[in-house]
Image 1 (cartoon, rainbow, N blue to C red):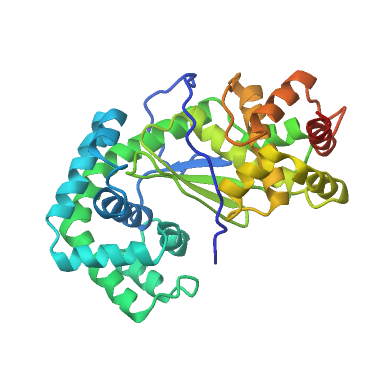
Image 2: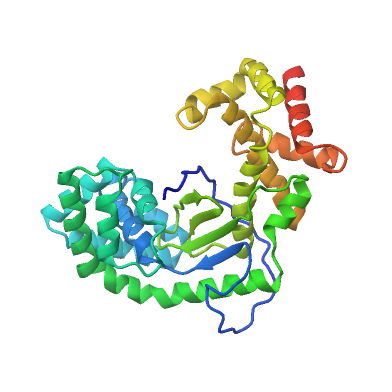
Length: 353
């Protein structure tokens, strides 16, 4: 099984918080909703934490520096010290293995290979999966480095570090699941009602806590959407994540239509849209998908606004903020105009400016 890579903007920092949280024995597995929060999992955190060590020491230490972690939180700063200390205790052979692993393949590719393993998968199961995965297609040389490094890293450093943090993140997962349950959160129903479009599948979002305080990843397989989240993620952030993901599936219902493709062709004359596409998005999107992405981002912002009154002033792309404001200004109601038609109308207005 393979998960489909998604580009996901997760840097949502909001002030509003959900109300209500009482002591509970509910664990992260029992919340019956389209969103489930889970604690730390070896299959994810092993790879992503090793990648953090790579970034803070080899890949991009000038950016992922002590100040960045320190300014984030006391917890993040402590984590940074552990990352640096762990690397300093590695010999040259292990450092070379680490560098080879993450210069040869992207961290997303490694995590994607193991994401569908059981949450309690052992280190041996993880390594066997990485080395036998057809998509990764590791060379024999890289397989040896993967085996050598991750076995050493787990035994000498990460096993005890994970154990030290597990209970704290399990409690965080319990807390967020309880808040979602107390507030009767049903994201998929809200998205369908707000858009006037019935989603093709009964989607479920599964979110795993990860030790990395900055970077998150997203995966998708059939009706399961998997994300990693950091320790500062709030209940509001949790709801916003599937808003973005589900919006993509809403727009998939009409972005291949003749009408939408025609408006995309006309938008090729838009200098702002083309400039950002060429500079930023060309390697990840076709131009038609890029036109859709601006709308998807804008509509997910509109869902945030409808759900808990969030307002946005900064754009992520060229026209997402404009589309969000257009939906607010026109009072988008799917019983009066379809999401497809209002999207095309919006771009027609852009073209005619």
